[in-house]
View 1: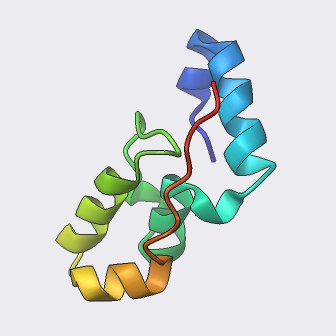
View 2: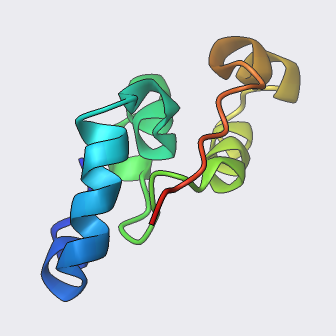
Length: 83
């Protein structure tokens, strides 16, 4: 799910992010939140997996209330990137 542009331009960072979010705790991936809730086209190409606030903003713009978003995602799903 992580964009190919990041994979090409910054391979070490891309691999660390993939290890943590794509191969690890993928439920904490901000990109996956949008994918599961709205659609793939709504994910900004430059969004990184740890950009939870941006994902919440997009979900809010798509019509979900903050309460619905927090219930769906949980407020404790803010993962820290270990780079």
